[in-house]
View (cartoon, one colour):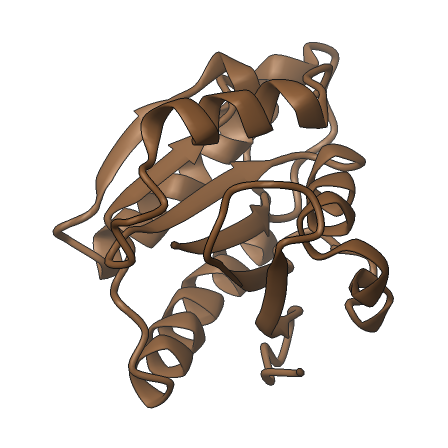
Length: 168
């Protein structure tokens, strides 16, 4: 399975955290990032995303919708297990339950918040996760996993706004 962990784009300030929307700059970054992500997947002959899960917060839903607009065959879904207070164990359990490791064609995108996104990267790639910088708003990392388990993934690439130049 290919797993892309994507932090939502830059969000506006607001009294109600759940309702904070992307800023115009956040939308611009994510839009450009989606195009770069599409190109990076194509260049590496990775399958296009099949599933895009996001936390129930507005800014992650907006980020996921923008990704879906580029990968039109992907199924988007609100996932409470990606809320800011969720744990790595909860996310790992959901992925293990829903995706069979024998199906290599799955490319799952998770859109969530800090610190969960960086914790997930560390969990899935183990000590080699040090090669990926912290995920800033709009940042992403793509991981190849033969098994959905701790330290069983390897980083394929990562990218950060505003340039979204791919790093390895």
